[in-house]
Length: 189
Image (cartoon, rainbow, N blue to C red; front, side, top):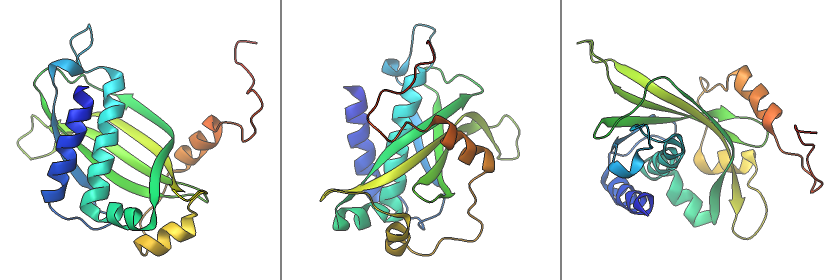
């Protein structure tokens, strides 16, 4: 239930947050709550994924992309995601999720999200605690899938420096679910 209220809070905050360009890095601030903790007294790994959702919606709101999607009757869905952890976030720690669009393949958009805290160095740098990637698609409320061409036409030109790393494209192909409704082969067979 706390994630529902956290989502509502950030939805409200994103309306008043600084506006961003469509491909800018969005920085969304959080604090670890008692309900985020697991039995080892650090933020539960599943909570990271939920916070990534909230940060992506903040990014979509502040870049203006969400308004475009609402007007067109489109909505995002996560196709696949992965996350790696470097350090634990503990109770009461403030952290920022940095979200950015990496680029596109023929069907989907890729987003990188980093959980960061200020570095101990006095240079103003940040320390990465965790980093996740999602592959997402967009669906039409009227039915069907939004093509990448439709998406780019609606959002605008893609900067030349947007590049999805080859390893991420390979990962996406490796974890893709079968397109048919037949049962996928089991790794336990």
